[in-house]
Image (cartoon, rainbow, N blue to C red; front, side, top):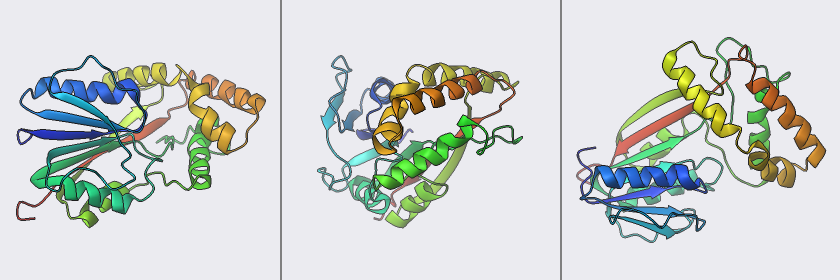
Length: 247
């Protein structure tokens, strides 16, 4: 991160506080860096460090920034919102300075994994979570991120030195590992704040579920999240790369 010195871009989609806290923390850590955040919705906070600026923009269209402009581009929570990943990464490459970096953090398309097979697709609401989101995305013409898409997209665009790091995020505090247990507790608390709101658009508006069907599904889901014998987790992936110095 020592190479981040001048101008950085954060691109996110409707993640409100979580994404913008990243931009604010980044700006505080690098006070000599100008941080620009973009989103499709006007949800940005107004009380921010002097080196942070938020803009309303749609990254599915041609980016409005000059070529070779950003030292660092950070992307997060974009799965299911990008129409053409190849074109998206190519725009990021164009706007990144030679020698600059790109970093993309995203989830596992909603798929809930379990290493011990305790979460089963045909039995559990947790197991049905990922397939339902995949089907909903397909119906609205969007593409959720699948394994390999982030790193292959970056390489295709021209980025080099691409590194992949995966992080296991338990859906509840079931893990005996102290750190993963704490992560699971935070994720459980966050997920339970508004499960109905999270699923309403995709399950209701897109998939055509009735309010009663959504209520029943959420009831089963909340029950399973409290079951510490179900060892479900999401896989979050961080991929970063560099634009060649001679580009």
